[in-house]
Image (cartoon, rainbow, N blue to C red; front, side, top):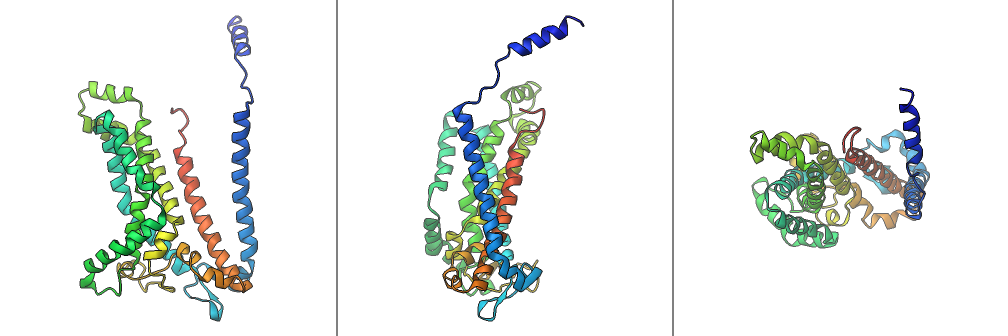
Length: 312
């Protein structure tokens, strides 16, 4: 006991100290710059939106009417549209993306894995406006014809925006889920196969449970992308204000035009509002709500991506 402690102290003293390199300094510096930018942006949004909060009070968020000529500013219908469009996108993209990630990471030959992943990730490189134009040319007509028995007014609906958004966030879901699955040690797969488990059983009982945390994070980060998408949604959602449904749980609003926070912020009303302090404050208030939603979802997803204590 008396010789172990000095030896341990001697060994600890011989270990190289962590040096503060230029790369490390730049990493911390740029990270602090990015965080500071977000804080400044949030403070600016709060300050600019104060007139709207004073005018509407707490009724700004649950308000169902937005009619700026009469100085009525309620964000609830746009929050509803944003949530519905994002949920549709997740319900469609998450199963396909997770399935593609499992197929890519676990079942196909290694020489084909990179080709499949690159093919999926090419979707992320297509500009948003191109997705929007494809939605106008093809998707909204397909949706209109498919929904003809329900007598829709047009193909510009919340459902159309959700389906288009699902295609856009699919690479995010697939890539991050694939990374989570590849993070599972191969030794555990080999040990499970040595115990007699089939490859499918290894995926279900070993890989998926250990990668579940990262896969949930992938879905949340994709949700953050969906919440912030503007141009493609703007072109196919219909941009109809005050579309708060009589029954929020009804499916009928999905096949009707609507408005999201991003489609409102991307519209010409933003330019109109700039000359009116109250109207401009309400527009900035929508930006503040969107920023809060996106940052919250992204932070939760990023936190889940970090390895837990005691895990690699």
